[in-house]
Length: 430
Image 1 (cartoon, rainbow, N blue to C red):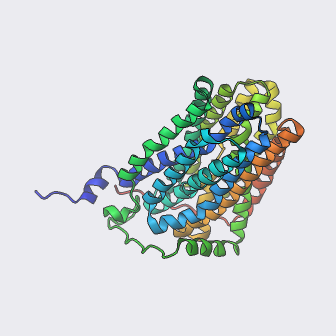
Image 2 (image 1 turned 45 degrees about the horizontal axis):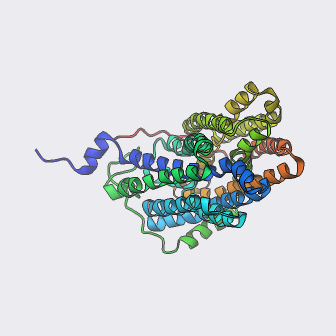
Image 3 (image 1 turned 30 degrees about the vertical axis):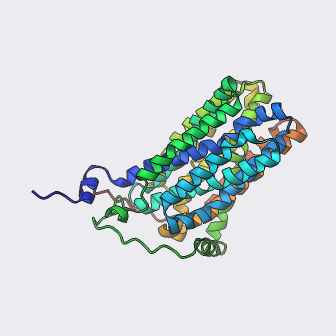
């Protein structure tokens, strides 16, 4: 009896796309953990070096901005050099940038490490990479996959934030940084051995394809920068591009920039221990992982505009409640964490789906990369602006209230995006 071809054996057991999703999930998880780690170090650095919140927040802000700006070019480099090469380069950059933090003696050095190196490295593994993997490897379950990969940011926060907070208390922040970088190193062989660029590399069709024949691989573009700027040129003349970008600016400002960067410091201001605050943030991460995964499932079935409306509206209400939640601790913060956590970045799967609807599946990664730039512009603005508000006013209340109002405005903005076509479901053969 003849031996079955490799592709048939793989598809009869487990489509390799799910292995690619697993490797991507772990890579994005580690990147999200490193990107969020500076939020744990704000108070220790303030105490040891006497730097102000605004001064420490500036390198974080620059890193978040680069995280967004690198995204579209990262998509171009993925098209040119492949997922595996880009992932390995990113791991080296943000692992080295964060690992050298113990040698930083000034906020200028932090600008180089957290701003340039960590920002560039995590930008290469930004949410756009999840969009590329979902588009390249999946036809069916694309929304679910995007939800899982987006949820990796929550999982990274869940693992890194309380771990670093507790290690900082027990071993000191320098040891905590080095241990975190050890986790980055563990991902290098995993990516090198298991990551693949396209289903055609293994003679497979995309998951959910109606044919068993693999799609021919497109020739790599000659110039990733030209590819990225060509996508931008297509976007700036599109109404949907600007509406999605504006709403995503608010998304970034109200999540990574504000809560992701300053929540622990705000808790310390109210007499809550750093490790306890990190645990609260991690609990939000659990809720977010569940909420984002469910959002991916929902975006396969319902109009993404209405999903975004409710996500932004509920997030806005929770942020308006936050200044009062500190006075009602602990149940007030628990209530905030539940509602806020469930839609922390649940906005991503429906935003990706609306992007694909407006610009096509093949262009979704690049176009989403440029939309993500505005997300990180919002993150950077809020990261520095909130630190400045705290320095000038003595608390974060004005920042929380303004972010809540912006979310309510974003809830109305997304209703103007072009309605997506009715979802069509395809069952996977393998």
